[in-house]
Amino acid sequence: MGGFSELIKNFDKTRDYIRDFFIYGFKVRNEFTGKSSRTYDDEKRRAESWLGDFFRYDSTRRGKQVSITVDSGHINENPLYSAYYSKSFTDNDIKLHFMLMDILDGKLMNVREITETLNSTYGQLFDEQTVRNKLKEYVSEGIILSEKKGRTDIFTLSPDTAESFFSRYEGLEDAVKFFSESPEFGIVGNSILKTAGLTNDIFLNKHNYIVHTLEDTVLLDLLKIMEEKRFAVITNFGIGGKATETEGVPLKIYSSSRTGRRYAVMYLPKYKRFNSFRLDYIKSVRSLGVYGEYDDIARKLCRCEEKCFGVSFGERSGESAGGSFRMVLRINEETEGFVLERLEREKRCGSVRKIDRDLFEYTVLVFDINEMMSWVKTFIGRIVSVESTNKRITDKLYRDIARMKRIYSRKEE
Image 1 (spheres, helix red, strand yellow):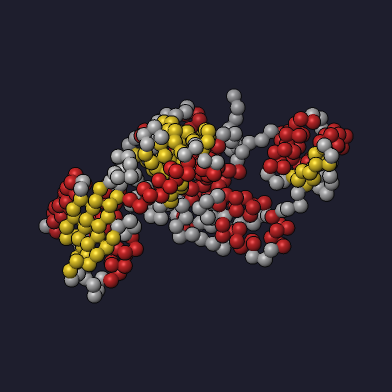
Image 2 (cartoon, rainbow, N blue to C red):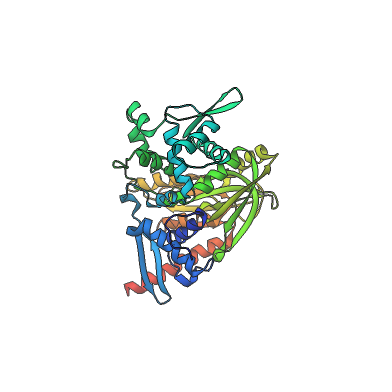
């Protein structure tokens, strides 16, 4: 039986467990039903070895809950990056890596010469195809440079290193430290720092959504598909963790300034509508053929965005779908100017109009009225009236307000 190792071959499996620990954090051991208990134990041990300081255990009637708790505004390096540095390798991989670095340092050699040097100098028997595959991999990553000499490929070690760039360009080191904690692909900047033996000791982000690093592989796949204007099949986690497949055309990536969540906006030809999928719910993405009407659909999305309050396109399809919403607010113009400023700043696709002294009307036409209700409720205490084409939603708002009043009235008694 194989022993436990912190190194991993399949990042997707590890990502799934860390995602559950970090995003949910309420499951107990026997609720991780996707794999065996042994797999759960191994993955938990790996995550704990990387993120031990951030692991939290809570005892409940159902058992011990594992979660990851991080005050992201007080860390200078995303701890979830550790998962990316744990890929396993074979003995031959690591030996061949260091030998190639030594052989090609300042030299130009072809595959045959490199193979013969490996055999004669180091006494290591590697066939030409193995060496060629490794060289091809390193050329694609920029570690090794390749050029043609006649019909033969010649290889040499790239002179471009993190240290050489940092010494050549003043301020570059600080720039990389800053972007190592940026939301999109911060792992790249962090990798550069680790290569140079540096850490980010300058910058802290107040709103640092560190979970994004678990989505970056999915995000990169989606961006490639969008650039090539292709179809895609996404495997998406549904209710209860059950995975479902959806075929569509990825068009844009939305990011919430309030929650930090990121969404992939896709056109679903089968249903002739747009839909949004949370990136942290997407397990994998598979590219399909080119979508011939990509530009037309992208323009249609731009028109539809004019009626999006957030990321929802409602339950019905078509640009004519959606409903109207009207809210009257009482705001003291002399003492509550900050409320008016906020209303103007956050109105999005709606409009604000003064209808009387200290009375202001907010109107909007949106695909999904329900999506904006959490924002509407932040004005409770100033709301005079609410009207909507969706009576069910407005009735629920009034019921919620009445229920809240009953709860607070009992407390005062």
